[in-house]
Amino acid sequence: MIEVRDLTKRFARHTAVRDVSFSVGKGEIVGFLGPNGAGKTTTMRMLTGYLPPTSGSIEVGGCDVFRNSIGARRRIGYMPENVPLYDDMRVREYLKFRARLKGLSNRDARTRVNEVIETCGLETVRRKMIRVLSKGFRQRVGLADALVHSPDLLILDEPTNGLDPNQIRQIRELIRRLGEKHTILLSTHILSEVEMVCGRVIIIDGGRVRAQDTPTNLVEGMRAAGKVIAEIAADPEVVTGAISRLDHVKRVTHEGVEDGWHQFEILVDSGTDARERIQELVAQNGWSMRTLYRRVATLEDVFVELTRRD
Ligand SMILES: Nc1ncnc2c1ncn2[C@@H]1O[C@H](COP(=O)(O)OP(=O)(O)OP(=O)(O)O)[C@@H](O)[C@H]1O
Image (tube, rainbow, N blue to C red; front, side):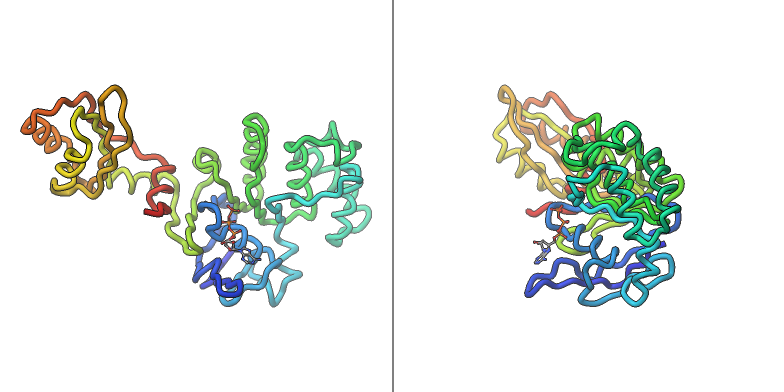
């Protein structure tokens, strides 16, 4: 459904997106993750044809987004980060207006608007002015707008941004339902959301793709790399230095202290387990230790590991 090849976008001297390539198959729900400023919005704006790339190519449903922009846009429903709505229009009137702008006949527009109002749970507010809607309902209107011309592909830029936990859950459920009929590319900062709805994840940072895989494979890869947590009552600098010198230990981070017990996070090489050697080290030095366990990795660990700045 989406084929992105060597996509680059430069703004004056700043390169926001560099040589990004990925594809999204029909029916997939793909999470697009990255820290602030990673290049997610810039990439999504290029995918939807709003921003021309400096170089590279994008095909959506077999149409080149720039050479055949009308064909591509017909297949794309885009919900930008801050949904621009007309506050002085009523929900139904606004959606009808948008449907007509997207080329639907008067009759088709009426039918589709009724359908998307139902799909997006907007029945109770269909006659309300957009100005009076809560943020959750505004997001639904944005989604209904993205859906009104029956696109195959939905591109959603932080659809749950700024919503309360109940609204987040409702929008997430809606996205999951939409995923039964549509291909979805979705950017978000909420990693638990990605684990719940996305079959695959693309992580970008500094404008480059750092990883793309299923959430499970990413987490498994991380788990294989392994993290051990230890709480030791001894000088943290001495402990950090000694553990760092053990074989297969990649990094030791002093996480904090509680009642004299210093907590350390120890990253070890794939397939190794440093716990026995840490135990020996603690015994040899006569330190006290109250915790030593391997920690199960989460998608958040993968994200932090791939995008950390130090
Ligand atoms: N029109 C522009 N002119 C100049 N620089 C820009 C422009 N748009 C974006 N940038 C820069 O490109 C980089 C990527 O921005 P982008 O908005 O794509 O990031 P993002 O991953 O969507 O971040 P966020 O999660 O904060 O929305 C940033 O450094 C940003 O300042």
